[in-house]
Length: 490
Image (cartoon, rainbow, N blue to C red; front, side):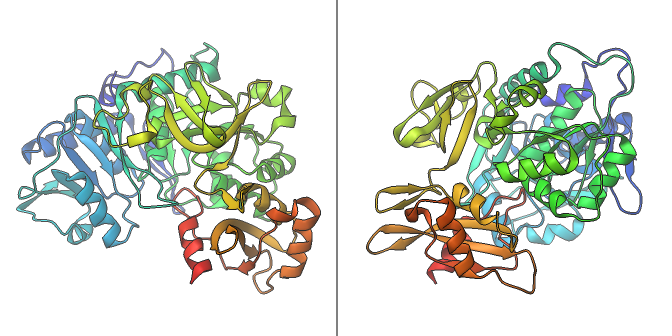
């Protein structure tokens, strides 16, 4: 089954309500029925066909989280085209970089955004009733992708320029169905209407698109949050009686720090997605709200989640909070130099037919994740940090996450990040950036150094502590370390 068939020919069990799309709005939530969503997707496909967009060519989309964007990506797949999400919040230069990389045959955007496309446009075809237009790029030689490629998504760009990754619908579905089977343990709901799936990450990111697909696959209406807001999230949980949901680590931290939220009832389980979750934040969340925190691990390059927790794992192994869980069925792990994690799934064998990933994919189908990891005796996977983030201080390894956890023990610190900066004698040294808990009072560097020396080996103690109003973060909350390194070295 490809993604278009998932919407147009759903395999929903009897008794489960057909999903639509809900968009959370402060002035009142917008609800689009399943049938209206299907109709809109078909109109998108017809518009692309009328514009002469050929199958297997990319279609870029600059829409914000909405029912229209869900119709746009399912309509693109219905037209047998390749969907390319582009975040409208990016700068013009970043948008141009993505368009130059993927060479789309058309761009879907609202009329006011079309002047940012900066490419030869011969005509604009309006999509009636959907509020956006298709810009046809006829003077640009569009790229063409192999059959089965559904989307091109870009990596997060936390350490370098974002890179395009091709995603196959059949392989993503196989990974997704493995997770669904693990969570449900063979049980399929057949009585009450499906609970909405809250999606608090942008649909300009693969994580957001993936979770919309996941929701529809399970017969649950996706509920989009255009922008995460902690009180609004609590309102959604209460109003829609949400028992379980996905959530990024940055949102967990925001909920932990929001004084106005007394309860998240009836929420029972959250699954952390998109970035590593701090064990400290996981413990704070569980202690404050009594909600199970099920960590997970995956990468855009491999299409989705490859390891995660179950509720049973949490009940039996709560002492392992901080691990990313156990590998899902069909996932093989291998540990290379410096304990770098390599993974092989049904997906990775066909991941890179054009050889763009170079040494990140070996001849046996193992993909190099770039993460330093270990597997304990009970089969739980622990991510120590990114190899690219690791600070090599005169041959001694410093993992930023370990130092950041200590800095967050200070009542004067609300957020922290540690990066490696060049040093003539040692090669690299750790440099800390902190956000004060009290916005008017910077933490005392001497106090932070003393705290670190209480909990860390001397070589792990940062050589400097800088205060920022906020850490630079990507759309999913990952710290943009390259920006911090630039600040530390200029």
